[in-house]
Amino acid sequence: MSQFHDSITPELKEFIAEQKMFFVATAPRVGRINLSPKGMDTFRVLSERRAIYLDLTGSGNETAAHLLDDGRITIMFCSFDKSARIARIYGRGRTIHPDDEKWEAYLAMFPPEPGVRQIMEIDVESAMTSCGYAVPFDGTRERDTLRKYWQNKGDGALTPYQQQHNVTSIDGLPTGIGSGADSQSSK
Image 1 (cartoon, one colour):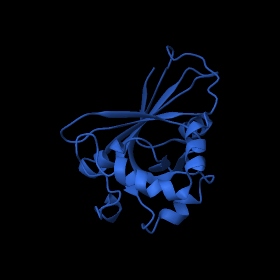
Image 2 (cartoon, one colour):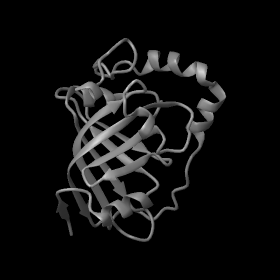
Image 3 (cartoon, helix red, strand yellow):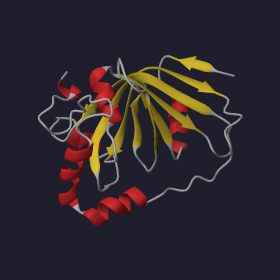
């Protein structure tokens, strides 16, 4: 049923590319565990040992805080259509901000989106597949609510929102956004 891999295999890369959503799990050394659903065309496998995803501005910024504090990250993909399958990527992550040298090259890999906050870079340590037999069938259709929200707000609203809602985690940990906080991209 389950298979472990040292890296992202070609078959796993193909499976990941077909999925419409993924889940991101992180935790600080002390504090709450975070699990966030993600969607849209925001995930890329760069190699068997590296992946990135485009992170859009939302109500919190737990993942960035946890990556600064501890670095561990798990990404999970579930098939909601023809194949009953789950895939997980385990690794260490860091946040790439607009002032990072990798920013432009990574950003160019995604379609333009309003509300872009950061890019999460993952060094893959291992991967796992499992059956997914209990995952329901569903024709997951992309929701455009977040995209419309930031289009309606305009670019001028993004930085003030991030300064108010995304500078620290719910546990008070720094996220690396604003206030001159050091990002892990320099580590």
